[in-house]
Length: 319
Image 1 (cartoon, rainbow, N blue to C red):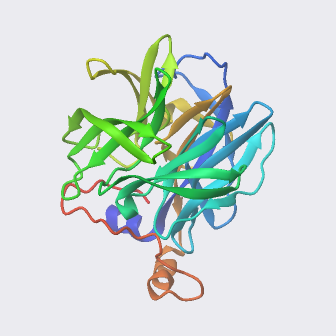
Image 2: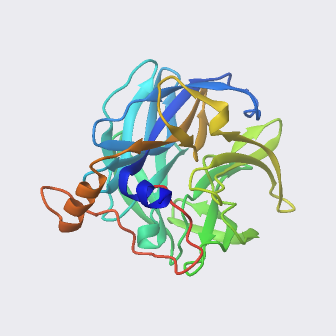
């Protein structure tokens, strides 16, 4: 009965939240409370997968920006710091689903690798008018179901962490690393780092360097989608990793009230740390909205449905 009531009358949305840190601050420690400022969503929208780019004088948030009515996600952008909360604008839209706007800079140009599993590939975008106008450069890697590809710099070269998921059993996945050839728009020299038999290794944000350790952010999801964030030290030479810590919803103190039940993305840029928060809400209109979306009436739609459906081992997705 609880499962039926949850499915019929509760919605799960996301909010982003940030805090100011020291630029060399250590990773969050389990059991320590951290206060975050929640960024309000516009009515009818939610935002997740936050990435930051800019300067201490003007920080921009890039995120998965979802229209609840249309059930469609785009790449959104807004200025958030210092003490600015602008309306989120549409920075780039695909025909299908997109999220996880991993932003990075190469030779004075800002690029982005968003999630494009809907198209079964990894794509590269380039900013042509900062920060709200982007264009597609091309496909970095095709014929792959790889959510949340994460660029990182190693020995002066840009590389990519690729989380490749088995399309017939989502419990099985591989963590790969490849070189990003931006000039030729491709990922080369791909090697396997590790394989998984459960929802454990999916990237959850940009990699971090602290005290000469290369730290990878992970979003495990065996219990629920968005259960917590984990941090692993990854040795790129011998391809081993060890857990350093984690951040759970119990460690997070939002500055507004809400039924916050999870988190799955963690990023730092300069002196700002940002996360997303999973929110559970009673939704009396959920059934009616779903019917309108199914019938595509009055501007409602199910436009964000995926092309890929796992045949078994499906991860429990709260949204």
